[in-house]
Each structure stands twice: as C-alpha cells, then as structure tokens.
Image 1 (cartoon, rainbow, N blue to C red):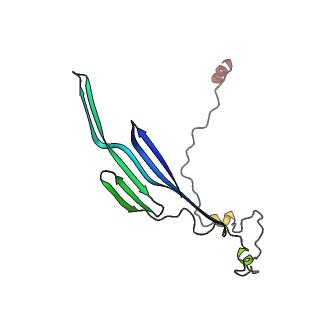
Image 2: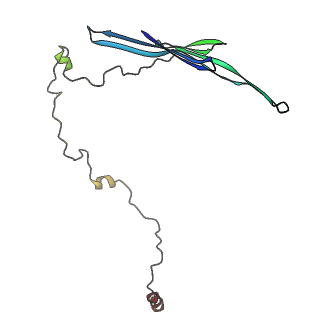
Length: 179
C-alpha cells in the first residue's frame, strides 16, 4: 500500500490538502491481480457564503475587508462510506449507493469453452441448423397492391391552378425584341 500527499499553500498557510492511497495485489499462482486507487482525505479552504465584511473610509483612504473561511473535509474509502462536512462543525457519514462499473457476466465467451474444459454438452444438430443465405430479398415482402387495397382511395381537394401564361402580344414581343 502506498500513500500520496498533495499540499497547496497560499500566503504561507495550507489552503488545501489531499491524501490518496494506492493498493496493488498480485496472485502469481492463479494469475490474478487487483489494484485500487482512491482519494482518502480531501481538505480545502474556501470562502464561506455571505460571510464577508468590507469597509472603506474615503477620507483617510483606508479599506478593510475580511472573508470568513470554511475548511471543507471530504473523506472516502473503497467500502462505499463517505464523510462530508467542515472542520469547524464536524462531519457526517453517508453510505454511497452500490453500483458496478463492470458487467456481472463476460460479454464474449467462446461457444466451445465449456466442452473444452469438460463442462456442458457438445452442440447438437438442432443448434447447427441451416439458415437461408441472405440474397437481398426480404422474406416478409408484400406486394404494393396488397398493402394499398385496404386503404381508402385518395381524393385530391379542390385544385386551383393559376391562370395559364398567355403568349405575348405583338406589341409586347416587339418591345422585348428591341430590348
């Protein structure tokens, strides 16, 4: 087990700290390994909401400001317990919701794996039945007439056409020719 520490200092004081752990375990006999990395403790200093004072004296050209700070603490461990709070008010312990980041079953297992390892039965002829080779035709294809015979006939609504274009009169065509 290894630990790692990170400290952030501002104006000579510690503003944030983070403690982390790394765990690695190997079983050479069974070719297994396990590794875990997590942030164990995270402490950060941040301004508290609505807790600031700022005064300015224009006559004496003085100003004063102060921000109250809260030291936030987050502690987590791989078992799913998390502690949240501040250093001043204490922390509360919460249980995280269980979740898995992996599927419970492998996505791919070779078909003959059980037979090779001496488990299960070999495939039967029913398992290996022939499927038709794809030839591009849809097996459930229906004729268009069969599909449209149950539908009511389409009747267009009143169709209004614009006036048909008239040919240009003699005087208009002469003007068009002249440009």
